[in-house]
Image (cartoon, rainbow, N blue to C red; front, side, top):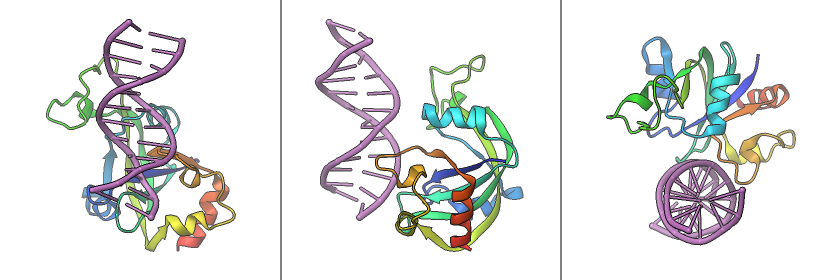
Length: 153
DNA sequence: GCCAACGTTGGC
DNA sequence: GCCAACGTTGGC
């Protein structure tokens, strides 16, 4: 089993929105970065664990945990001209963008803030704490996952 | 709202 | 294939 961190803007879709969805499950779509796409398409597997990270908001940090319930499949929004994620250069024969489905697992009692994550001596390799890292989907090592989870709950 | 750091685009 | 211009991300 692998561990991941997915970024989202809670003003648009946050951990509470995920928890409120029917079956507490939601397709994680709209990812339009090739490196992140490759993770979604090739490496994110069913039952992998995911930190839900809130960005561009008042309380920046990890809000809770979700689980992957469906592995990479074509992101439907790329085919929808009405969608902000529409990509005219993509086709159903050769989809360019992928998504996975995630299910809510838990919300932390409090946001594990970016500031506190950066202050943790064990967290050195996570993309989040590296300068200029903007990936919206990133891997988390098992040891870093444990450290972060222990700190959060 | 600012702005640094990146990614993408497109002319050549 | 280079690289300048442009757009986006995301913390502050």
